Length: 349
Image 1 (spheres, one colour):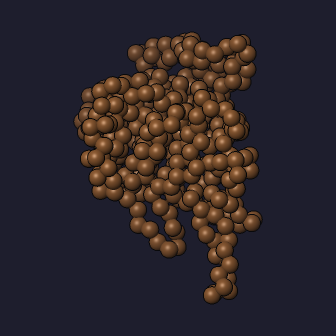
Image 2 (cartoon, helix red, strand yellow):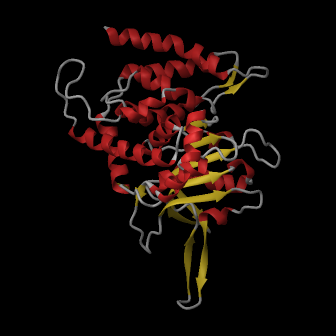
Image 3 (tube, one colour):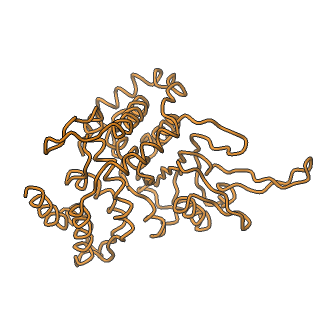
């Protein structure tokens, strides 16, 4: 992936490919928010431009991401930087905070993340004590180490933006973004994520070690970056939700793009190397992400570039391969080739 793409969030061009002058006033407001988010997070997270871009796409597209990583790879820094980039006004009625980190362990209970009713002897009433899920950005650290009961609570939160405690439902905020992690090297004491929950994650991203220059920059600038904490909350919750709405209305997804997604999915399901293909829901979740990717690249329409960039991260955790088959990148590339070529030819007509 080209990490330099995140630097392309500038003013949109004044004309489209046909020479017509589009109405880009609203879209420019959205891309300004994307650029501000990108700039804020990049001050704290070095050498991860591609991951930052995917995280911002998922945030604006109302999705969640699953990171496969190793300890110390920067996942907490990324999630915290995303949370602190969003300025909120807290109230006692809706105690939503920018960022919360949940360390998942085998003895964790659903109430530990959702919250619990608490009896107040002074008022002689029961009040709900909100859990750490009531935040804009939630880091679910080592999510595969917790029990199926807690997984079920997370599934409801991620899928429905709500939690249910003692038969009472409590709504989460419209801006609710989960960054979950799992360690691919350590399988002791883990509970594999069920397929329905995996399907709730828009992207699965593998975080490799950063390059040497970026690693040196991390060491040289750690004091300066530590002082930046809580000083750059320039994007409001309203800005993020407005950008989400504007991009949804102004970035076009053509019928050919949708047909390409369906053809790729059908090719995968027919491939003998694939035991289980991706769901239709995965393509529905992909649509707004493609729109955000297009907006990042100064376009009012989704193109082949957006599909090739995002679809590997959308499908790599949704496809179950046959025994003895492991090269998912090759399988995706082969099944994408014909539909992508067909799409490219249709756009040339």
